[in-house]
Length: 567
Image: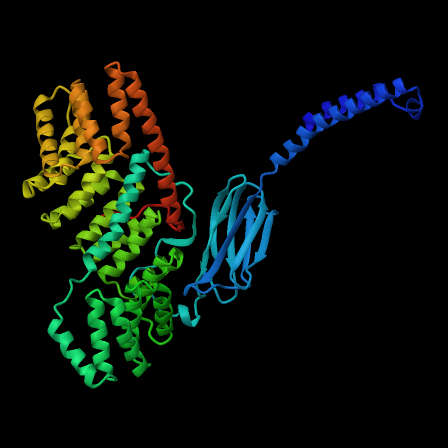
């Protein structure tokens, strides 16, 4: 390296200026000791000069590494797949093949921008066209190869969408979410994504059926005829629907043994296995049925199992296949929510938009579309859709909760949202959340801090929310903010302390309390609260990071850079 040359010349000159011959070592003892001291000093100086250079050269080489697994659309690992990693310089290409377990790896890769491509005969190639490797970064990217056109597995033409404008090419660890806005907005969009997924369970979960008489009759039949196929299947299916999957499985297993070729019995067993938490068994049985029955319900069941097993890339392809084969509302919704959960807002917007066209009266499809638009940063469009959802079902609190969280994250809320939240309060005056969200909306819509009438209304609603729910920490926090602005510090301190008592880990309450203490000259108390705020903020950041890494992020390609049109 250029900056090493002067140092090296200095060392050479130093040795040249103090030559030591064999004659020196044959000299008198005193001279010999002096010569040895000089020699040791020169050698030590040489080491001290060159050691930092050696360490510096080691630090400059900061290779990254990449590994992953290649699977087919059924989740089976593929061996012998050619995997190429190409840098921007076309001559710099790294090539490996997957082992018997479908694993590939690249070690000691220089930092830079790369293209990853996987190829195998009888499969369509998969490619991630551009991604960046930071120095020393260790990344995992799993890919799926779909059957080539004309192969038996890929011969069925999708019945739902035209070819989607996106392709999910792989998954990676969630190292950074990026996106629009502050950390508050990022956290809010993650929360909304998780709650969108939970709408699937909320909408589709069946109520326990009244089976006492029917169950009794079936058990009596089985006592007389233990090998009755129909009685075993019906009793098992009934118990599964009633939330007793583990109790149902022995009956469904017996039915499947009695008629091994019966599709319904095998499917019911696979479904009950999933409900009982045995996802691997459910997936295996459902995949065995696909050989003779390419049905949407099987793909959807496999998708649920794969997601619960942590195989999100396989899951999203199965959700897509289910929606293509049978575009019913639950299948389309689950496909969109899976994309949203794994940080793919543009594809989620496309799926929810087309789902909304197919099912214009579906409230949760509009809620999912709104959450996806919010995640993409399209706040105005998100507001429009969530308001439409609340108009479709004005009595349901779900849309109001979503819009309340959206407006809490934004500094300037929409007047449309505040108007809907007013309706929420009018419909449910004794709902603590309704009062809180409407109060926050009114507070943010104030034209100026001197708006005493608006402030009094906000204060009254927050107090009412607290009266309805004495452990409502967020309401105490907002009340403290209001009193702080009025410079009523004694009440603000009390509010913040109540918020902390309701939720000791509420970061903002500790921070704002520290600021009030400083305002009134109690610096020691302020420092103590600020220290506690720092501790909680660090702990919270670690927890959030851990949660984010548990949900792997989709790597997707947009074939058309323009966003889908929102009608």
